[in-house]
Length: 285
Image 1 (tube, rainbow, N blue to C red):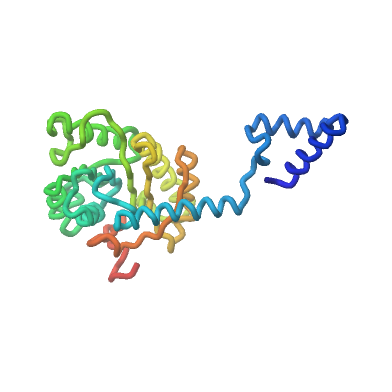
Image 2 (cartoon, rainbow, N blue to C red):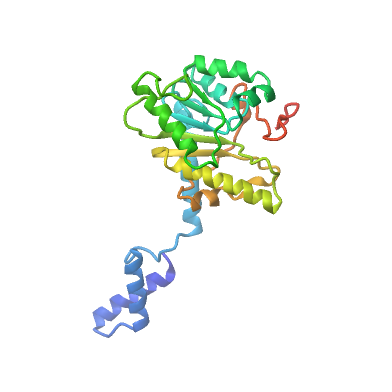
């Protein structure tokens, strides 16, 4: 608690014991504390020490989940996972591989149209076929900046489980059916609006894209679900885009940051939005 708050309470006690009047300034502070809802507990501010401890605790929770499942970032096949902005679909395939070939709880979306994705990304068609054979659903031409598009795809996938896929827009894997309960994880790896990285206009464009994504994701999460966003740190976009700040403005609460290790996801290879060239080049991260 803050020193001023401790002193105020001591003075209040002394005044009560001595029967002397409490100063108007002290009364105002007490009324403010009551309005804030922290009267008798703390001064209303969170210390830097407490913030660091909270961040450490959240990070330990993430790392603990990974130890429990034995898989990176605590993923497991029982989670319903929505992947957004997939390019060559290799992250989706990596999860399916980690899940021993079970992709039944994966809904995979891509910004590109199917024809363009197959032409741009090596082996994309083969990866798509492998995913659908594993029970995953792959949906192309999903723009997160278009209002309600992501929500519509997710809700139709979920509801398709009621009729064996009759109303499923993918014609592939179907959701669980029944009342929509939300996704355990919604993942957007290396978002990029394709307009550059750090100049002011490109920063705004990418923040707008992330804001639209967070708006959609917030309504698709289950209770205690998580949104995972991976960004490149070496080119300045993580700090310039202020991803955590954008998420907070759209109603999401920051929990922790973890290192993204591409090698932990077998076969994963990230490609830039425009042009379609590998970020990792000859294996450098």
